[in-house]
Every structure is written in C-alpha cells, then in structure tokens.
View: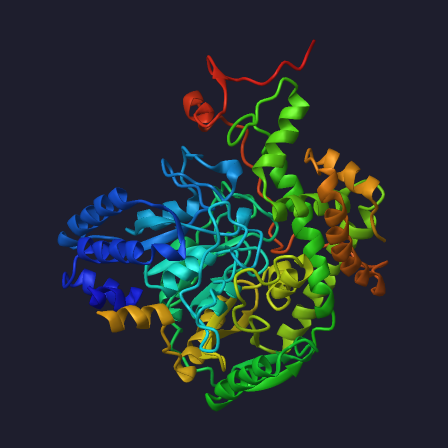
Length: 497
Length: 95
C-alpha cells in the first residue's frame, strides 16, 4: 500500500498513463491513509464515495487513452474553495453545513483536468491565521515532532494548515491552498513541503470564499517543485467571472524547470536580515545562497528599503478588506442565523456567535482603519505604502531575476504558542507579506531540518508573471539541498509496518 | 493613536458584533497592541505618493449588459435559514 503513497504526483501521473497502476488503487490507498491519520484533523470533510466514483471514471478515460493533465490524480482541496454539492465551511461556525450550488473556477479546472477529490482540508477560520488553531473544527496537528520535545504537538502553519499536514502526512498527493499574506508558503515551510503563491491574477478567485480580495490568491501545495508546477498549470486560467483575473497566458512551467540557474542574477535583500532573525535561520539562508552560487548564479546584494513597513501595511489592508467582505454574513441568505425578533439583533447575535475571536478582531481592526476620520491616516496611507513597496521591488528586478529569502523566522512552534499574543502571531508573516502586497509570484521550498529535527524552507520571489524563474530557482534549491526527510509520523508508521 | 473602551464599543456596533463587558479590556488591549504597530508608518513621508489600488496593471474589464444566466431561484435560496415561496424571510423591518 505504501508504494502508492511513495509516488510523487509526476510519477503517479506517468504510471497511470502507462496503465501500470489505476486511479482506483491510488485513491483507495489515500483514503485509507486519511483514516489512519485522522488524529491530525487535516480534513473537515472526506468525500469517500465521490472519490471512488471519480477514480472509476478516470480509469475509464485512461483505458481509452484519454484524459487531462491530472487524470486519476487524487488531491485535497482547502475548505475555502466552493465545491458543488460538497459542504464548504471556511472552518467557521458561520458556514457550518453550507453546501454550494456552484463550483469554484480553480476546482472546475482541476476536475476538467481529470483530478479526483479526496476531501476538504481544515484551515484557520476564514483563512485568518498562521497556525491553523483558529478553526471551528479544531486545530490541525503537524505530522512532524521535534527531537527535543517529541511529546509536544506542533502547528502545521496556517492558514492552509490542513492542506500542508495532509501532503506532509501523505494523506493527499497534493492539495490546493490559498495565500493572502503567506498562507501557502508559511505552512509549506513548517511542514517540509513545496508551496507556490502565483502572481496575483493567475488563479481565478471566483468561488473562493473571500478574505482580502486584493491579496487572495490560490496556489498548489505538493511534495516536489515539479508536482507543484503541474498542479499550478491546471489551476491557473483567465476567468471573465473574476474581474482581476489576468489575461496573460501561463507558459508551460515544466519546459525550463530543470534548466540551470547559471547566469541568473539572484538578489539577497539586506533588510530581511532583521534583528529577530534567529542565527539558525540566517545560516540556512546562507546555505541557500551558497547552493545557488555553486550552480552558477550571480548573487547580488540588494536593498528593499521599505521592507519593515510591509507588516503594518498588510495588517491595515487585509483587515480592511476582510471587514467589508465579511459584512455579507448577516444570517439572511446563507449560513448561521441566531433568531431574534428584531433584525438588528439578528445580525448582531448571528455575527457574534458565528465568528471566532480572531475573525472578530480583524473585522474590528478593519472597521477602525476604514472609519471616518481614520481612513486617510491608515487605509490610504497603507495603499501609498504599497506603492513604495512595489517601487522597491521594481528597482530590485532591474538588477536581478529572482530574490532569495527565508520563508519563516524559525521552524514550527507548539500548538498553543502565540495564542494570547496576536501581534506575535502576526510577526510570523514578516517575510511573506511583501510579495502578497505587490502581487509577486513566490515559492517556498524545504531545504533542511533544524537542529531539533523540524523542516525549514526558503522563499524565492520572481517578477510579475514570471513563475518560470520561480520554479526554476526553486527546483535548483530542491536539487542541491537534497531534502529527503520524512515526517516523524510517516517514519513511525513505516517502522510499525 | 490608540483606542479607548468607548471607541471599541462604537466599532463593534458598526460591525454588528457584540463585545461583552468581560471581554472589553482584553479586546481594547489587543487592538491597541496592533494599532501601535500601524503607527510605525508615520515615519514615512507619503505626501507625494499615489495610492496603489491595482497591482497587476490590468484594466478591469466591462461586460456587455446581457442576461447570461438565471432562472435558478431554488439554488439561490437552498442555503437560506428561512425561505417562503422563493423569498428570503427576515424579522419584520417595518412596523
């Protein structure tokens, strides 16, 4: 059974096409893996019957020599993508039991490419968080444990924590995530997997439950850079139903993926070497620089002078947009309703009971920064900062083809840490928010284990719409770092068997 | 800048969220910790900087004013807490 789980998406795809394995066998192996790892709480909904039916249909197409680029590949979908007839919750009590009557564009693309849905993965409520501890359905546990405190449960990162844990625990070949300020890249780094946040506009936002619309972007989470690239290729499309969808055609990401970085200029921004950066992370970053140098890249020291303002800018923009987007949850058309005689009381009780603490905090923050008398000082100021940040990157990309930074400050923290200190939790996003604010494509690639045996990733940022360079540099890091470590849980299970 | 209890209550009312008296101190403290971080932006002179509202540079497209779908009232109301003859039902708003 584990033979199936050991296959990468690329390998499984080749063996499915060769009729060497069937989608039914592959899907069954993953469904039993989901059951065996249920304690991680990575899934909110498991679509067992739909998966088996989808696998049988894929097998029938494969038997005729037909099928899309993901034919028969079983994947998990973050429970923020609306799926027709399948409960979609955003991990909120507000949407518990919500069954969409339509399919998001990204997931439609996946099913059209032949993919099979295993289930919907857990996340931080409304994708707001960096630990996957704010879900109404309970925290997600990482399949990784540290060597120095192996009894302590770790976070998988967030907000796409269920997707990250599922891919790391091998209960999905790959998964979709969404990234507003780091929600794909940070959990990828914490969980020892690859995550890509594409250029803003690459993947349609239609049918994805909105958090902050000018930042939200869907992307793939997978075991290898190649797997993530294949999944992204299928997810991305121009969509007239999303007014911010990009018409720029996505090039074939696999064409240049194994091309050397020789002659490429890689920027290393001085401002990312912040005081609070632990020495261990700093050294891992240096190793990454050495890897790319040894592969023939030119390392260029660059300056992104407004970097330290990215975090406050993000935490003005994102809650502002969230407070507007989440105004729709009023108990009238869908979702929770706490019944009252009076309509204003109904709104208030519904929202007070339906939203969790972190979501309410961000709605209040957003309401504050948009309110009369404060709009110019906060929201308008943040939009201007966004322009300065973009100017920084534009200047840098005149000199370099890609930028290398750490993804996270450190390895994964324990479940419960940072819980009572929202600011400390927000600081988790310090290296990932700049690319979000400017819309740049970026990838997190696992490169090593920390001293205490937990994975850490590095981040590569590229020019707008240049996912090709991002996956090419990411693939080089992957190849040179030779990260092959498996989660404590995967090792444990293999040992037992 | 920072907020006091009264401002927090006003914000909560605007957002249609109730903060109980027990929670109020914590809410105000947490919000102020974050707002304090925002004040860092005061260091930057943005007088001559244009706000950035469109990061891809793509112009928003306009669609023709045509009916392209519809006629699925049952689907639209299928998740509603209360429906009557195809309408969403809410507590009485006019006396």
